[in-house]
Length: 376
Ligand code: ADP
Image (cartoon, rainbow, N blue to C red; front, side):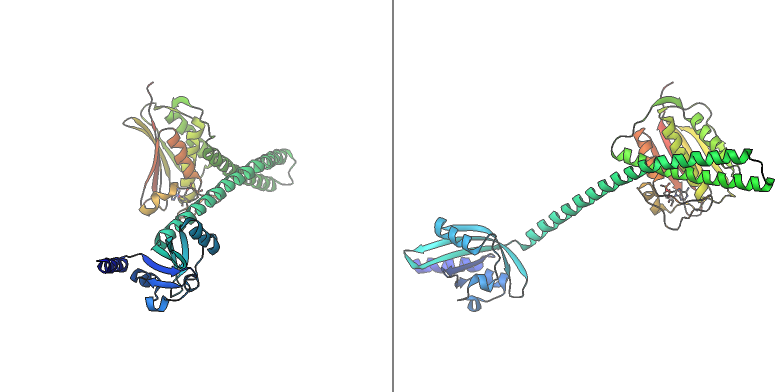
């Protein structure tokens, strides 16, 4: 009866997927099941008599002595072990070990059951690595944001001083007795160009500051009730004066379009759309600004005849620092940072509105935004 039972037990041990081994108190293998053969690559014959921690090059969580001590004092031990299999590959196991006392110290043995958790541990490690990388990335983004904010603040003062100096020089050049009229015109043109460049730097600085304010949740809107059509017309007239050589058309709405919004921020969005149209479309082509009502929304559109934007790029142009490859600045000077449209989207969405673009390569682009209409 007992012999049949022992046989049954031995078969069960062979069937188990876990590696089951019995070793003596010197850690020499006495028994090694099929699961151990599969996991470690040595047959029972090869493993028998070998010292397990030497054969498997075991890495213990604390030390081998600590495991042995727990076995002697508590009769059992559980924990993770790192082994190397026959082919030198790492195997991580969840190990459960019990000391089986056979009365006489010499005949005591240790029963060890090792479950392969290599894949689970690899996934856990991968997840931990990814989390660490994400945290490091967030920290560097935050540092970069703080750095940009600091630099922008520091740049503001000298650039403002520079603009005042250039304006002063321009005024002096107007009043100074000119050596000759052409020389006076040449100087005044140069100073005008210097002032335009300073304005461009100022706009970039303000965009960077807006970005850090938005990120820090510190961008405040000064909401007013007003006619979006009138605000848009002011912006367009300003650009017509600034760019007399360009054809900028304005198509007003049929009546006032009352919105509750920050007029400076809304003008900033329209100005950004317009300056992109001026930058990316050929100087010979007209630009149209339309204001109209669409259901419960006031809508502003800026249409240009520039290169257009491929469909797959249209969702990305609103992302921070995204610039469409192959689209070059063709008129006016200067390149951008890929910041403007990101700010436009954030600003309009903070007003409860939406932004978008309709475009196809070679067919120009129509950038639009909407704001909810309010009752008069
Ligand atoms: P940038 O300072 O680079 O102009 P924006 O955020 O304003 O930054 O625009 C992002 C990108 O979208 C631009 O770099 C350009 O590739 C593309 N883009 C914007 N406006 C137009 C336009 N009117 N026509 C074609 N491409 C445009």
